[in-house]
Image 1 (tube, rainbow, N blue to C red):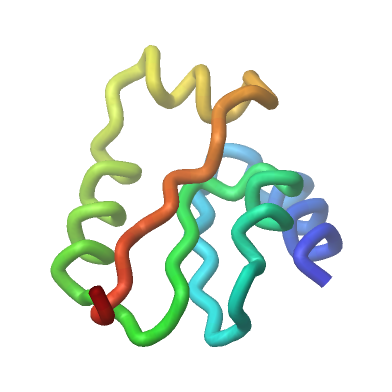
Image 2 (image 1 turned 180 degrees about the vertical axis):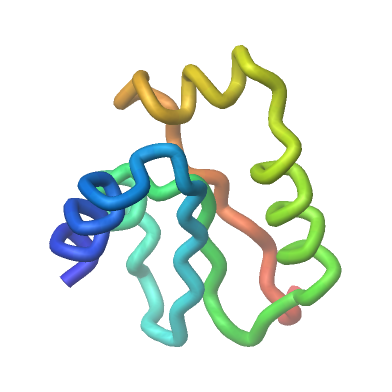
Length: 83
């Protein structure tokens, strides 16, 4: 399913940052494979999520170019509310 979502988003808005939030454990490798920008498992840590959204929507040109053109650019694993 993540692959279809990623393909659909790339066709409609290739520059749009994508953050996956899931309650399903161990999905990070799949998120990296499909090229999302950030990944968080529930329970959410709202301050970390807000910080990631701000960072992705205000990124500099160099980071933006890397994010959308380099497959080696790995999805950021965001912390959860549980330590």
